[in-house]
Amino acid sequence: MATDAPSANVLILAPVGRDAGACAKLVEQAGFSSRVCCSVPDLIAQLDFRADVVLIAEEALYGKALDPLEAWVAAQPPWSDLPFIVLTNHNDSARFTRFRGDLVRKLRNIAFLERPMQAISLKAAVLAAERGRARQYEARAYLETQQHAAEELERLVAQRTAALEKANDLLRAESQQRERAQAALLQTQKLETMGQLVGGVAHDFNNLLMAVIGNLDLLAKRIGADAANRRLLEGAMEGARRGATLTQRLLAFARRQELQSRPTDVVALLEDMRGLISRSLGPMIEVKVIASRATPAVTVDPNQLEMALLNLAVNARDAMPAGGVLTIALDHQLVSATDGLDLAPGAYVRLSLQDTGEGMDSVTLARAVEPFFSTKGIGKGTGLGLSMVHGLADQSGGAFRLESQLGVGTKAELWLPVAGRAAETLAQAHAPRAVTSSATILLVDDDALIAGSTVALLEDLGHHVVEAHSGKEALAIVEEGLSPDLVITDHAMPGMTGVDLALTLRSRDPQLPILLATGYAELHGELPIELPRLAKPYTQEQLSLEIARLLPDRVPIGPQAV
Image (tube, rainbow, N blue to C red):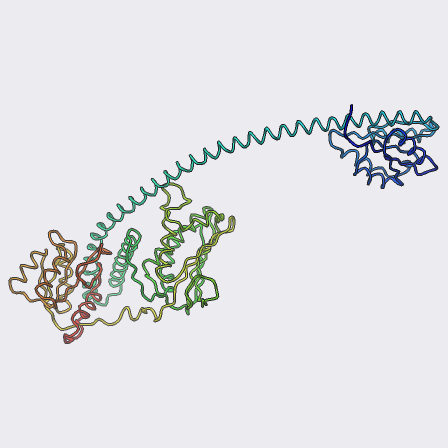
């Protein structure tokens, strides 16, 4: 069969005597190329180029290490079975018989020619071996053709499959996007409904707490020095305070509020929240806190910072289902314009939370702060938590950083600017009560329980109190001739709100001091009139301080008996 392939290449290894030259001449006369090798290693090296037939004198192999040659033969591709022709001498001893048997086992495709021999015998053996080698090449070409055809078919099938899979992926992505959008809308509606519900419940609950705290305040003055009774009273007061704190935190979670940023002692805030964080995370997670007392105050809304801390801690808990360690750390950092932190130069406090949880991959990390993005599944998270933390940091003039590695954990950093002045200390918060001279106060509250408690607090402070249970009743009292020094009014009342009452009273007397005492954490929208507010529940001390601020020109009459 005609072929464009180059002529066969015959390797010759016959280092003793003139056999190598004679064999090369005969091979070339048969129309093949020949290459004489000087040793077994040289032969193996030539095999890696091109070899169609190998012609070897047995004395070149006898007593030599043939493992490398055997390894080369064994490593041939499936189509290849290189032919070997071994020139032997007439020696039938047992030793040579075993040697030749080893050659058959190691070289596999082998033929023996005994010397002396005729030239035609060598030529015939070489031609037969070459024809066998040529058929191997034909088999290789056929296999390669079939392989290429199979690969092309696989490529076409894979291409078509990929196109179908891409179309299916698009359909699935659109379906999932619709599901996420519907779930996000549902969660938003649930949050809005919860906010409305919590707002109403908080108003009533704060009213109840107002009655409890007010009466406990008065009872504290009458209980005497009995240690056991005072301990019981303090326990009741502490429970009421915790109830008020819980209500404020629920409201802060359920609403969108304007930030009330002020200098805040973040170390004290963290210590105050440590118990809540530990209870929220459960017994399987260890909470470590690393903070220096020398950490400066930061400018932030403390209520929102508490919610951000709790949110990040709960996220860490969810990332450690089998338990782990949450490390909360505070440190003071100075940022310059060359630091590349995307922060204005200045002093900051870095609040970091490091967990030992599952971590996130780069794709999830890149989307972690996107609104409505969540890895917790439908119904298990709103996807707003980290975006709210990010918004708090940005509005406070700081930054939020998130680092994560799969299998290692996640680190969240909240950078907050250092305040220009110190935070209010505990001693400042409990400053002596400011007492004014007796004032005439119009108290307006639709809840008789709260009104009665507040009247008792005010009268205990030495004030003359006129009580009204609605806005209309308060207006009627003023129209009958009452000229109050101060009006204290609830906001949410039937018929006329506290703000509506204030507008009407101010239209008659623009200088009349009015204090809005409300159980709502916020009043939605901008008020048509600027009014000082006192959040329920409040203590007698807070009430006294607010009255002193609104009536600064009155002459002090001294503290009331306690």
